[in-house]
Length: 369
Ligand SMILES: Nc1nc2c(ncn2[C@@H]2O[C@H](COP(=O)(O)OP(=O)(O)O)[C@@H](O)[C@H]2O)c(=O)[nH]1
Ligand SMILES: [Mg+2]
Image (tube, rainbow, N blue to C red; front, side, top):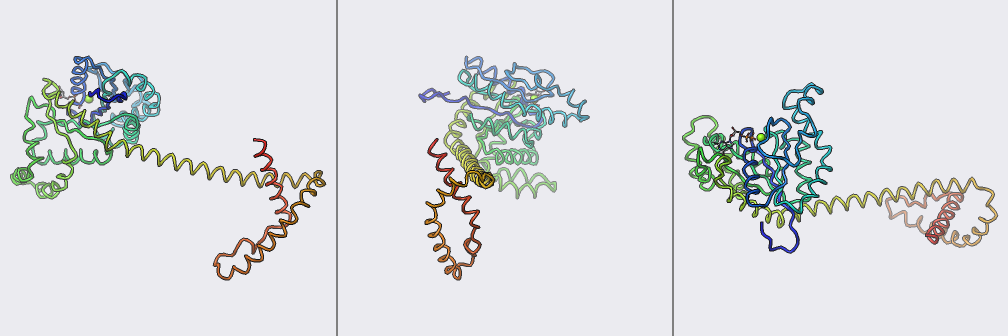
């Protein structure tokens, strides 16, 4: 991590997302070990309630909060429903999780997050979105999209996987690193070639004679734009190859977050606060109106004070006369004004008296504040 900035930088959050079996957990284990070796330990979160044994120590483990098997039993759910419900339950406590993370943020290099095996549980659930957005509001957050390289060598699977990644990028709008994993089995060179040379991908597609190929060839045009937004690295979680390149991409993604994503996130937060402020003002106005009404009825019940009130009325009598003139003017104008002016239905004398009393009361309250 660059230490040039005087201001202490927030640790980047690396969200590991990918299809089941792509190697997210193994990759987490690898980068965790790598950071410990460099004496820059990370903070580790496990969000997979169904993992039987973790090959690394998580600082926060969803399994400590919810027992996924119990959830399945209690709610009468299958495995996927159980995982999703566990994640939802955990998300209700995420503010506490965030507090714990914040306490350690100063002393860790990165925040690593492992997600459930089945990708859609995290990417298409409300809790996944809440967790992602909450982290992204405070930390430079990025997606590490893990790909099972040996299983992506056919153009059709490659394409499907890219479209999925594309949908996550558009949904989260966060910096995105494509991590081609398991390069100890198959090199990711073919993927890089397909992504940089459109003709090469078309060529590969043309050898695919299934109905998919024509669908794919038209869709691949869309992906060209998507590829421009990505960083691509090839790694092996098992051998450790490519991990330095991965962390280089993490640094770039963190900078990208500061320049491109943070201002946008801050703008969204400001917008939300302005909206809330406006709402508060509206509520306050409503409250004042309510007070005016209740105060009015209270005063009108208070007949004992009429003598005093009368003195005030004397002083106000002139004002009232002036108002009467204004009302007349309004009536003349009403021909041009399509909306009937309020003076067409002037308030009754009693109402006006009450209004005046309210104004007086208000000015007294202001003075005494
Ligand atoms: N050869 C090889 N196998 C890997 C690699 N990374 C993960 N695996 C294997 O892929 C399988 C699934 O890995 P896992 O980390 O559990 O995937 P997850 O479901 O995405 O968390 C396991 O059998 C791992 O041993 C890798 O870099 N190379
Ligand atoms: Mg896993």
